[in-house]
Length: 362
Image (cartoon, rainbow, N blue to C red; front, side, top):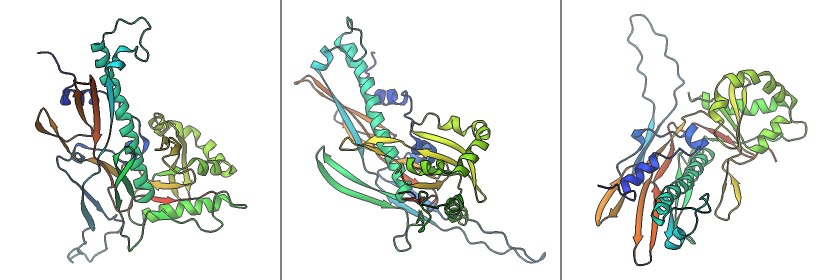
């Protein structure tokens, strides 16, 4: 029996065979495990307080002192759908494809099979960029706001998620004090250290990891303008190469590792982020603002997925996976339409496991 390459599950297998799209925020800070893919319409988001308390001293014959369990919150969310599609017409199949030999012997059937793979990869890259945006926004805002589109030009509902108590305020936001901006006249390295140390302490006091200092491109330029920072980078250059972190970050375009720098007792991996995407207007936009910084640690969050149900061959079909393909064929007009959709949801593993400072320069 011949293999139907346009079968939903076969296309899903093709997608799994694609090389993963390098996505810095998603890969480093929001990994996905099999337990994070839900065969349900909703995902469970639960996060716990950090713990930094000591065990108490006690009299030898006394009973141990009871320790309260760490508080946690659990919420149920229905992830928003993301997706895109690509059409294939008979006219497309009659043209020479990109990269195809000028005098090619490829048939329409062979071109259709090749287009199926190429379209799947192109649609996947776009979904990966949206997921990367979602992960970056979750760090920057301790939550995210998305607009659901009805069609290309019509905005539907707006969905807002925040992972902090609106009454208590956002613990993941640090405000730069007057005279502490990194490009202020007379600003010193000591003030830079004081800012980063205060951000680290906010995580340390809650028992949360703090290993990475993320810098927007203007923020890292301000650091590089300081002789003290450049001296530390030069001094630690050999250690940076041997640490393996530089090799880990090499696949990510626009991401640079400057080494491990000590900020008043907190040793951080200094990483600049200049990842970009084209927004709805076609303007290149940074995933991470040029003038912002953030302190966090790998694996601070997770990216979850909910199932998608669709009708195929007049039967309901439910798939719980990171990607769900779907195919429509219009025999009357000799066209084929390939969809690729997903229902991702980015969330922290602990309460506010990152601290962000905006406008540290400018």
